[in-house]
Length: 202
Image 1 (spheres, rainbow, N blue to C red):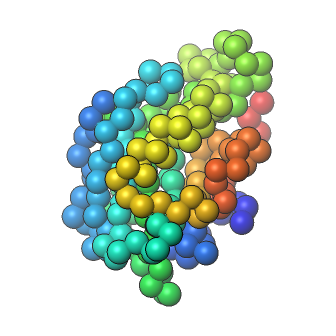
Image 2: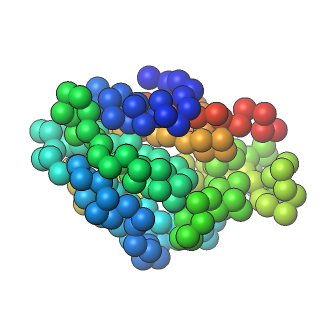
């Protein structure tokens, strides 16, 4: 399932579609009745960025094949928005684990880090800059995608049982651009949700 969805539809998709450095404390701990929040301790990524990653583990036991998992980029903002829902449960009672991938900051968006991590390189190995702000680097999407696949996903699997056949990836704006990049460069994810992707980029 590959589509472009606004944030509200993403939440519905999160609840229905996917089921077919020490980090700072999560902003949503204890606020979502259907899930418990588990911080994931990770080393810095390929560009030296320090990440804040949280696993929202369903209170319900995992299916026999493990939990379906939806990965959310811009995890700081995603956590704040998810906290407003109070509960995350599908009408069919399916269980979906959520992994928020943010940065080690109290800001909703770490604009410098995400400008690099979420944008593809035009010429690999050549210094590039964000067209919106020449002081920000761009072109790190390949390395960040590898970091998710080879570091974050295995770390999640060490904490919860995961069904690798049902993994989803959501991103907004530059994050949506990254989702489309991932769609073209890996078969790791089976649900791609690109909310308002920055298709104008380069």
